[in-house]
Image 1 (cartoon, helix red, strand yellow):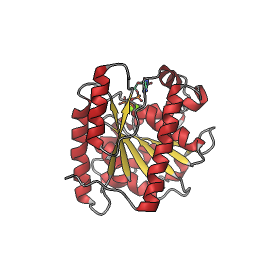
Image 2 (cartoon, rainbow, N blue to C red):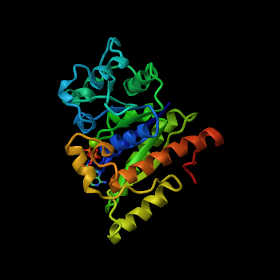
Image 3 (cartoon, protein in one colour):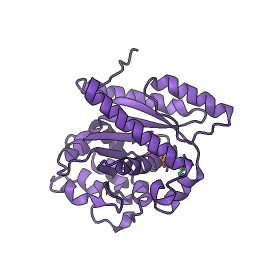
Length: 269
Ligand SMILES: Nc1ncnc2c1ncn2[C@@H]1O[C@H](COP(=O)(O)OP(=O)(O)OP(=O)(O)O)[C@@H](O)[C@H]1O
Ligand SMILES: [Mg+2]
């Protein structure tokens, strides 16, 4: 099982769109995939066609349960797409950061809960909120790797440097298992010079761990409004092609890891 956090504390850069559509494309390739919605906005939950308010138990109950009685396995909802599952979020989570503040090992609650999953998922994708507070820190401690979603727009890399510092602190506390940050350029517009310049900077920053860009595609936006992933909404559009390619590349990363060992690029390089 590989746990991947999809993160950037900058808002509206394509984290949820990536989590949901990458999950659908991995499932299409035969993987068993769990999406964990870690954002109180519940956007991944509604993008997958669920109503965030329909759930009695959400990830919030798990993270803030001081008696440790809530079972993560009771929270997994099955999507109509084969191999695709969701742990939902809703606005009740807005106070999670605060509610967790008094709990022992508050930054490790998600990691410990994921270990208790009975089903052996191939991938767990965590849709992080646009902040670097307790919820995202929980995701980083739970994750094997982090995909940092970066819109190819000016100033995009400023936010990335802050995530880098946070990941370095986490790395310092578990040097035996370094997180590998991957960069994913999103909403890329091939026609503008500024987009191309930022894309080059992203490639340089994450070199060699940058995935090919996801292009601007209105179908991706429409699909989220209809509560469908892109393979349900328009499986032949350019957005579907981009996310299928990303799924193929993600699978390749872990196949290579099996054959060649875990790749880790030293921070000094
Ligand atoms: N490649 C794309 N092409 C066109 N629109 C996109 C693309 N990716 C995302 N969008 C749209 O951009 C908006 C923001 O995307 P999304 O919700 O995925 O970002 P986010 O980083 O999860 O935001 P937040 O920080 O609020 O959680 C949404 O309306 C989404 O439909
Ligand atoms: Mg989001």
